[in-house]
Length: 445
Image 1 (cartoon, rainbow, N blue to C red):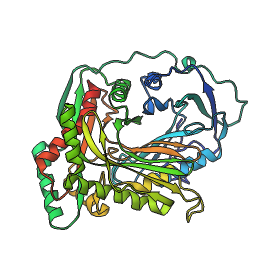
Image 2 (image 1 turned 180 degrees about the horizontal axis):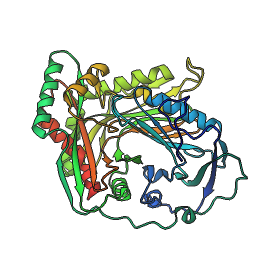
Image 3 (image 1 turned 135 degrees about the vertical axis):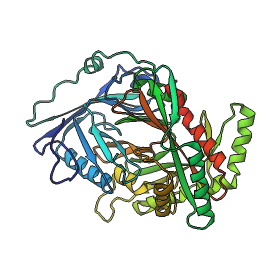
Image 4 (image 1 turned 60 degrees about the vertical axis):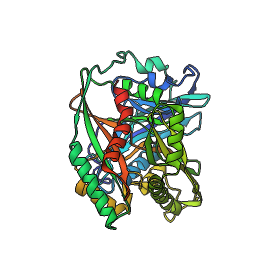
C-alpha cells in the first residue's frame, strides 16, 4: 500500500491516518516439523525471513512500508510504527514473541547513506517457536469488518514458480581493488599506532554476476542448511546469515551476542581444535573482542537494572570460521527517563554501531571509515530483523550478507569486514574478509 508522506513524520510513508491495521493470529497444525519448512513457504517475489534452526518468521506481501533516512532513521521508524500499532485491531490467539503485528526492518550502517531505513509490514506471516506454529494475516481498511476465518497456507500462497539456481557465477572487485584496500588497512594501522584510535573495522565488497536471475529463496535455503546456528534473513533486498545478534528483547529480558576475533577453519578436526585454542589465547583477537564487548555493555547499561557481562569469551564454531563470542544479558528497567520500557528497535539504535562493526572510540572510527574505506556500506553491518506490536523483537547485524540489485536481477553485492588493531597485518585482514565471504559464495552455489 502506498501513500503520501505523513506531515507528522518527515520522510516517513505510513498508511493514511484513517487506515486501521487489522491483525489476526491463529495456531496452525499443518506446518511440517523440519528446519526448512518456513523457508519453503516463501514466494519468489517479496520474501521476508528471519529464521534460525527452523524457528522464526517467514512472510510475504506488503500492507505498509515505513521509509526513513538520516540520523533520525531509527527514531522516525519507531514513531511511525507506534502510531500504526496504536490504531490496530488485533486478535492474537497465541501470545508468543512474533505473533500479532510484526514489521521487518533493515537500516543503513551510516546516517549519511542514501540507503536509509525501512520497516515492511507484511500481509502474511507464518511463524514457529518450538512446537507451536501460527499464521498471522494483516490488512488495512478504512472501516472495520468482522474478522473472518484464516485461509489455509496453500490458499494464501497460491501458485508460485519453483526455486531456481542462479547458474554460473562470476566475481569482480567492488568499489575498491584489493591492493588499494590493503593500503587503506595499512593507513588504519598507522593511525592506531599513532594513538588516534584503538580499533577500526574495515569493510570491502565484491560484485557477483549470475547466469540466471537470482532467486532469494535459493540463497536462503542454502544459508539456513549450512549455517544453522546463524540467523538467516531476507529484508528489503538484504539477504544473509548473520552469526551476530545485535539485540533480542523479550518480556523484559535483553540479550546481545558479540563476535570479534576471527580465524579461518582448515576443515580438519584436530587442526581446528588447535586453531580454536590459539584464537582463545591470541592477544590481538582478545583485545579486539574486549573493545566490542565493552561497547555493547556501555550501550545497554542505561536501559538495564542488571547486566551480566562474561569475563572471558567462548569460541563459536561456524563452517567457515571460528569466532570469539560473548553473550551479554540483562534485565530491562521497567521505565526509563522517557517513562516507558524501550523497544527492541530503540535498543538497536542505542547499540549501533558497536565496536565489532565500527571501532573504538566510535566517533573516531566512523570518521576514519568515511575517510579511507572507499565504499558506501549501505545496509551492510546495519541492524536487520523484526519488531513486534509490543516493542519486543530481534535485531541482528547484517553480516555474511549481500544486497540484491533492484534494477538487475543478475547482480548482487557481497560484503565482508574485519577488525583492525595495532597488531593487524593487511594481508591477513584481506584473507579474513575472503573467509567471511564464503557463506554468500556458498549460497550462490
